Image 1 (tube, rainbow, N blue to C red):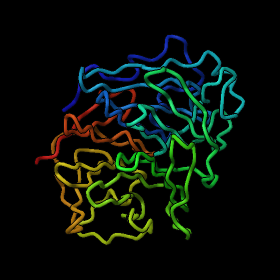
Image 2 (image 1 turned 120 degrees about the horizontal axis):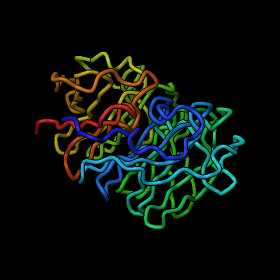
Image 3 (image 1 turned 45 degrees about the horizontal axis):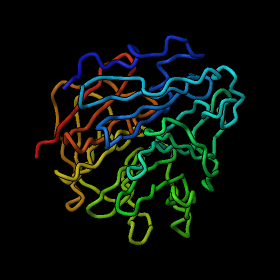
Length: 314
């Protein structure tokens, strides 16, 4: 279903930011699910594409789009350092590095390509929704590259983070990253991830197929699947896990949605009706994500398109 009046452009700041606001979505940017408020949080910009560091939310409870964090008045002063002069984070491509720390009610962000130079930011940032403030935290030990994937795990109250070689967990209380594997486990830039909470697997889908990290051993393997769809050759598709249907669910443009049964390793095409059109060529990342309260996937695909929701038949 398309949600009327949910275009990000309708709630842009009155003060025009440097760059093209279409790049809030288009320039390698992601999102995270605020499970407390049933909303999809979008944050992004970066490099010389867009300097604004404001944050948006698609709120499922009211089926509306809102700007929930205003841009800093200092965004034009970006010098390609992690923080602006007022202590808020410089705009960046967020890729798959956003998550929501449920027990602390904070958005989590790691890595990204900063405005205006495009260099990688190795800091970790959180936004405290209750306190309405940004906080810069630990400089991560992750490799200096782009394309991080992050997923919060309620069972351990940590965020799992995959860079292009290694796998980590992050504890907000200790402000510490712990490396979980002892061998290089390479993935390309073009993957997105979701946490299979039933099997305790960190599942990555993208240009290169399906890769899985078993959280019991923290070792990665390539998952051989059947009926593989064309999305496995797409750049950073939207990937989520529906715990009710027990499926990994993937969208990467058009009308088709695909579900992966992690037991049989078989893909099924589960939607063919009219959908939201082509995906952003740079990837969807976390802008396709599961909202538990409503048992739907929410999608933000373009600032000039309405948001969509999709429900997998149970």
